Image (cartoon, rainbow, N blue to C red; front, side, top):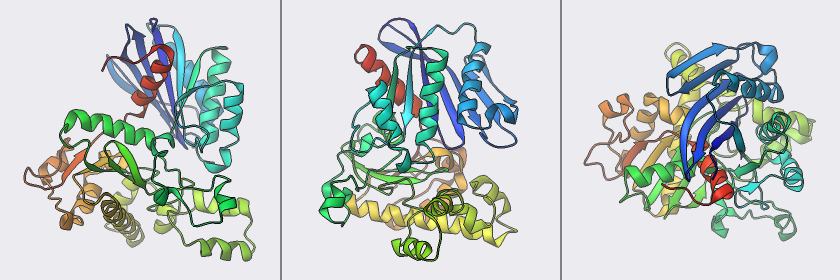
Length: 398
């Protein structure tokens, strides 16, 4: 692998994460991280971290009014670091790979068309990832680009887990459970192999708690069950997504005159914590309001309860539990939410170390706890970089 810079772009529904790694000598060396948050809002913010430290800067909302503009803004921002080696390749997170994509791939015309055709399955994210591919092409025409899929980690789900009880003709059209947050799961598996090598291959639940929330049961580094299914809507209530619903509700709303487009807007943007609280879908905001706002308190209680319930279900799928991983924005940064979830799982053998949890250490349960609770920072960008570099030049050194 020749020396240069490998650019990684990870598009969320309202943010973009960017990482730049130096390449060469079959190794990756982190050079820079950037996050542009608040895309489409009145107050977007660009944050960065490099070898000299970090910083943040408010951006003009017109320059981050949508993902296309935001990607151009972020790539232009690379000029702040004149010592960056020339970009030689780019890797992208793509949320939905459906049945077509089980592995990372280099992006060419037909591949991009196939990814674009899946937009309806992940409307919050797929178009954002595609916008990143186009932004890189505009800036560096002909640059090799690679896609890594959130669904790929779950491709070996057992048939009893991924199959919906629908007619065979519909199942043949791809109506099945796919699972998401696969890059986060893979990141957690890699981190566990270093943190708890004796337990990493045993019965693990990765709780990715953030604006989107999913939990995944993993054994021997493979996904066995997960809370998201055909789309990113299923599971606990999320920031603005509904979580699991009785499909009869959807039939009722459609019969009552709601259009498919309005129904999609309702389920993805107007539900979840935002709907339960009557305002905000941001967990930090809800926690700040909890004492004085019964609706905020109820939204938090619903979220915690559903996460606890999903842990119980996934523990049954695993036949027991050895490690519970907290990751994602809420999982990594909210000691209070972690504590509430763990206290409700004492029947499983989880015993919280209150001081360790408040400090956010890697292990937040007591030494005598039969089940180990951990906090792991999701590093989807490193997973993407490793996959792109492997496609370019063969496996990297650990």
